[in-house]
Length: 115
Image (cartoon, rainbow, N blue to C red; front, side):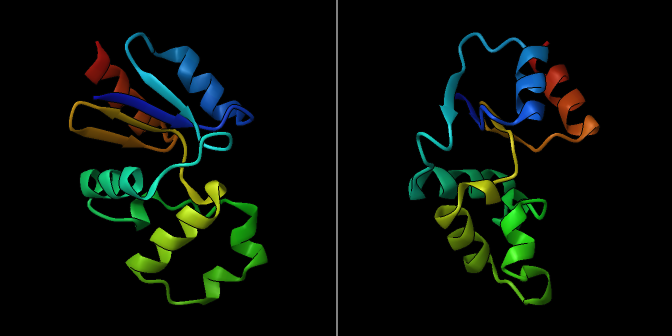
């Protein structure tokens, strides 16, 4: 499977998508086509946690005062399902490998995998 979960209004997502060959990938824009429970559970299986998929940079993270709360894996799961901005982006799946977020190290690992 080759799939990319992204947000089209995110400049970083756009930059990363332009830097890789996306031929053969299924693209899913998470605002217009929300992720399903099954898709999120598959991502969590590959990443081994929901917390790894969770973005603490989302505006709602501060608005909801989540940094002062003890969150469980089920909390992270529900927050991502309730609010698409809590998904760390982009999430790129190549075969059975998952690449989450936009760190330089992560993008380089993705590019190595695709070359």
